[in-house]
Image (tube, rainbow, N blue to C red; front, side, top):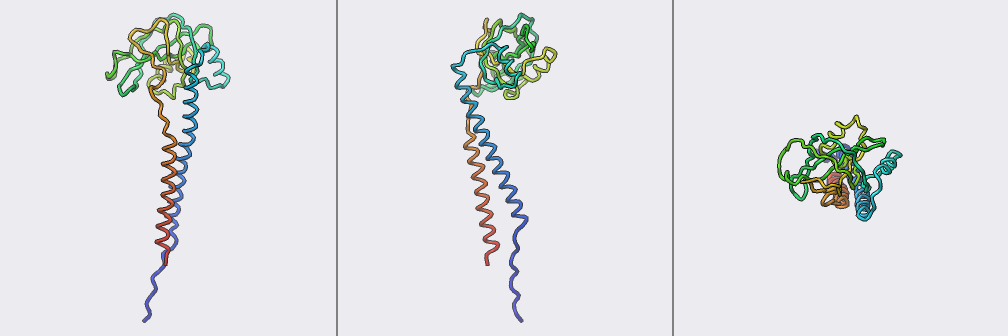
Length: 228
């Protein structure tokens, strides 16, 4: 009686499809990190330029923003009309490894399309390390110089404060105060992050490396499966 030859395994269609999907995902993540790398390099270049840039009037910057120009990280100067301060939620943050709370208050703008701009005055010195302090009122200084930033890049409770000011048509930027006249007692201006990391190239190489490794593993499994 003749022996039956062992059946040769078929081509692994399911494994191939799963490998291609995983490969596409890994390459997509690597490409996304490359895009983030270009964005971060542009951001760091803008911040470096900011260090020596002169402040322009806030009204001019907001006019340019209304025309579609990105004025994020632009240094501006603004005069705030006198107004009784109302308590607003403090904004949680981390700076130099410590929990900090940042003071925010509206700056009333006279004769402009946007009635107010929300000021981030800086870190409240007495609240470092504390948990969930209650809202506090801070009067807007008469004049401020600072950096405009998009709210979504900052997070925290600034969006809540902007919602509370909706009737005043707030400017779509937060003014991160560098200097205030008069200075706000007990608050230290901290307009920019203490350190901005840029490890996107490392992340991109990691994802692309995983994609190549996946192909090698698939090829090795296929060779073992299909060899005589």
